[in-house]
Image (tube, rainbow, N blue to C red):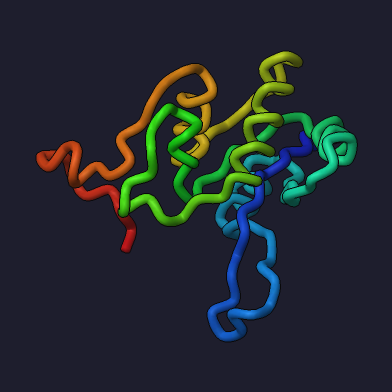
Length: 144
């Protein structure tokens, strides 16, 4: 049986129709990588109901905490800087819950970019909100 890997979703906004509700999803590269590794991926939608989320989580053999937007700075004891503008508190809360369950159940977790930051913060770590300001000697970390 193929392992079922839950990939955490982010909100996607339609620039052509800014008044339409956001979609939920993730880059196809995550899906492709899971398939190419022999897994069966599904994107875990953002849900407000903990029982529904738990039901989705229980179907997973493992969790992929995907990349995406900035974490809410309050999670690591900071006020947001002017450069920290793309936050999603609902996603943060859901991914923290999924991570907590995975740790309790010893379920495998793969964290990429934002996901690694989430694990760090969940374990009591902090972050540099804007690397160019805090560490000007560092290499460029943006994809834009």
